[in-house]
Figure (cartoon, helix red, strand yellow):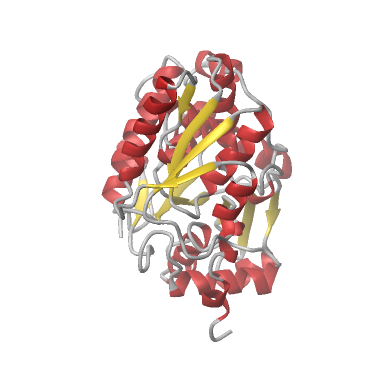
Length: 351
């Protein structure tokens, strides 16, 4: 596990108004209902061993079944429209929140979507894949189990569409790019201002980390606003070292768009291994237990791919004494509940 033990909160760093002004000036296609709620979760917190637990509810973002991915899409769709694109091209796994949210954004903006999934078509279409199809996405599969096959598929599909006279706009797998990362920097400021209004400034913010774009954006945004909260990320798709490497690249790229450099220190990128379970997108026993706990204490649904595994870390960390007495923890609920319907039998087994 990376980053074991406690350290002082990172001090406020004054960056100046220029980068924030440039962040605010970025064109956005307004999609989500923002700000999303920041709410106490006392019963869940008491059961998990974190008495002062709060949930940042990006699952209630209010567009296309929610998901924090919409924050990045507000910037990406605006950029696509400015470039006169007529079709978006992106991809990920069959139960991708990103692809489903992109399909909704494309429909809203009057664009087509070509979705590239790794692997082969499932025997039963369900969850996020069913919603993407319902939203009008043209879906294809690479036939390869290698997730990076999606990257090649996106490139090939965009080239083919361009040769046919279309104006494609390619969005990397999972939406992990510099511009999309800035959507999560905006989320960091939203959380900071909201928490101050509520008198609920966090000591620690916990989130799931896949590609690392959300983590990179939060780290950058925290630096921009001078927030003091610590960020703990839980890898749900790859080795923590790979996440940290992605975060460094994404944060640097996003910072360069704002005319700044060096905003994220490597020492601040705390990413934890050990909670992926059987594999990315495959429910884990600890994750299923977290789903049941959140449902039965708060009436809140975690998703099996991201938030359940990240919250399993919260439970384990609390039991291991990682959180200090009275520490206020905000858990970023990034959404993704449609994936619950991909394999409901696994969630109910032994319940």
